[in-house]
Length: 193
Image 1 (cartoon, rainbow, N blue to C red):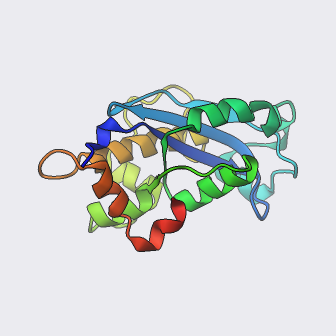
Image 2 (cartoon, rainbow, N blue to C red):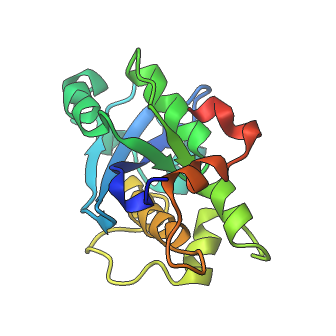
């Protein structure tokens, strides 16, 4: 058994343009190494298709904000380097990993953990398992860097990292093994690996 803190994790969050399938307009990655949460690395990305009004209402990112942003190809090497060899963590991970797989052909994380699935198993009795509800219920929005707000990738990745550490250390003994976290997702989530 491997203590969870012995693995390197990258918590990811994507914001999309509202198209189907969604294209990337913002990406954040937060490293968790040795059990310590790092600072978010965040990129605005110019999507191939415009951002829909509904998506703008959710995350507040406008087409004007992304018109001078790099296209994903310009940041792909940096993103791939940050993801390399790490366990990918996200809330409702199928969405985030799906976008990353479309943008990084050949990307397949060795392992992925979904904090939505883990929260349902390790935090029974919550009123809701939406990220915003868990942030409020668990007080995860403390001492945030200036400018971060809900539904933006940097905020969502950072609070998801805090949620992940909380889940990893939720056992009565103090912390869980990586295997317990991975296996705690159940067979129905094997598509994430």
